[in-house]
Length: 304
Image 1 (cartoon, one colour):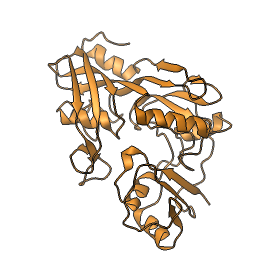
Image 2 (cartoon, one colour; image 1 turned 135 degrees about the horizontal axis):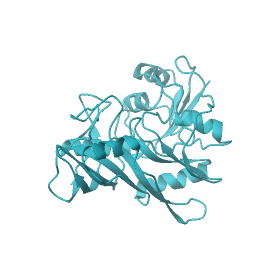
Image 3 (cartoon, one colour; image 1 turned 90 degrees about the horizontal axis):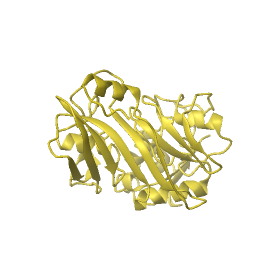
Image 4 (spheres, one colour; image 1 turned 180 degrees about the vertical axis):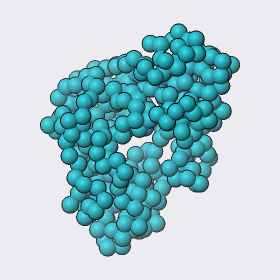
């Protein structure tokens, strides 16, 4: 019987508990509400009201009989490992690969591969997310750090919150941006029309800041170097849509669709303080081939 334990992060505050859990576990809202009604779900050690909203740092835990998702099994899936030691592992995630299991994606994920490769992983984020400190969208490629123990996980999570963990992306966006650089400071929250989407909104939102520099311009698009100052869900994709320059090939937020393989967005740089040595570490990875090919087809030269 799987046991779920979640700690509410800053991206998921002020949301009804059943909605939050339906979005972050394999269970439906109906199943979550039944667990609450049956006194089988605990919020900070107590039985919650079904209408309670989440707060930063809330601890939710419960067990349930699994009916829709099998146990997570180790799978011999190749990992592009950039760095590894006793506390953490840095992976260059390919596009079109899910980070952790969920309904519809029970296996073939980064977590399945990690369980095969590593003897131990942190369990801070619960049964279905061992080792997962932060996520990258399925259709985004790039660097991801995972924790092998809870102490490393907690320290890396703190860096994400206090913004001492830095992340940079290559993004190819629709349209030509005239300014060489820019800052997008616009709060992001969940869409009231579609809970699986995010949007810029003043209602139930969190501060979101994205910096960008234009690296190259093409006839109908341009290449950006993007830095996240905050880490909201779908932040770059939402902010680029907000300024009317959505990510090329973004099926959800975009308008220039080339194929079905996913958005032209790659997390190329990751920097953080090592949880044991306290030394700053920085990792970079090359732009993926599909982005390089797009640039070359447009007559561009920036293909690092």
